[in-house]
Image (cartoon, rainbow, N blue to C red; front, side, top):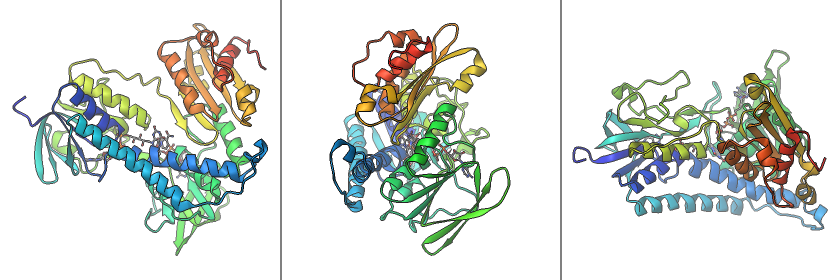
Length: 465
Ligand code: FAD
Ligand code: NAD
């Protein structure tokens, strides 16, 4: 490989890029990874999955102590919020994990090229004024928040913020308006509601959480309302007027109708994310984007340009860290001449609210478009562990092909749905039928028994309901 500085040069050190770089190095390829951020780990570790979960976890404890959850179990406490400490433990989690990636790079001899990379040609990139050549270049540049036209995000001012700004708030807003009832809006809205903010979610569509099963979306709305969030569904934001430390949000029904304004101390813009491709110099290598601004690849993650590959949020598919990671493994294996595969039909998604909301595979609506289905449902209210733990909300739903009984999708709302969904994903990966799940022995008493019971309900034979 004397002609190139590296066998593999990865652009971006998020969960897609850092995993691709480490796997490539493990497979004996000389590897570098360019990252412009001051720390490795990408959106996920720095300003995404990890810091949001640190705040979700801590605020959940606060909420449990503050509301009647602990009191119901005979623990009477009056919590006092120390937001600085809560924020410090978030920063500690990020520091520990991003530092861990730096350690893994050193351990696996991956060179970190510090700076933003730009293509000179398909095998040459420039990083911080220096050029590097590589036989293979993997684009793993991730995504950034989609702006709302006419609404200026200013995280430093802290009034109109994106998810990064919403993680950094130094005081609990009295009133918070969340624009977009998707994953980010509900997770970060939940954090600040639990800590005392009055939260209003403005969602353009008629239901929260697009892409999820309709039963789940409807149930989620009920649960968030019960928790005290105000939901304005089917509503569009027409403007945000900021005066000093206050904002006035103008909204009107999406289908037309009377306008109104909502006051807020903090406005979170969370209407989706878009791929990071600007400034990469893709024109220099003749790589075009699709209509959604994404880089298209084949099943091996190769782009149309020889030697250039792409993975993660910058390519089509759900914008999820574990999807990016699996693509990172696969692309490195494909570059090394092995067979790296990702089954995009079985990628679980989890919303880390309380209860958690999780799903894998097809929604009932999508499954019905393909043919006849059988559906089994089981409420968490009838699950002994959930009942014992005072966690009555939610259900499990198993969708199976009516003829073959093969499981097509599983959806859960439960306190530990994110953990429960792993067994559903594994069962689907192995081509399981609902009967396979129903006849698998599940430990008692666990929330996971609800998956077994929902699978039993597919053939009409649950026991505990
Ligand atoms: P990224 O993680 O975005 O990493 C790309 C990296 O490339 C960045 O560090 C960027 O600085 C760098 N870069 C960009 N351009 C260049 C360049 N030209 N040169 C060098 N470097 C460059 N997903 C989950 O699965 N679970 C969660 O709980 C979850 N929570 C989230 C919470 C929030 C608030 C947000 C915003 C996202 C969350 N996500 C979650 C989504 C997840 O973060 C992304 O799907 C994931 O990070 C995508 O990984 P990636 O490697 O494709 O890109
Ligand atoms: P999203 O796509 O999940 O939700 C955006 C919401 O905004 C949608 O419901 C959409 O209908 C609504 N919307 C769009 N334009 C609007 C407008 N003008 N007014 C009102 N509502 C509007 O996007 P997100 O919440 O910003 O998250 C971005 C990505 O990050 C997601 O793809 C998600 O996969 C990822 N993420 C994942 C997790 C997780 O896995 N737990 C957590 C956070 C983020």
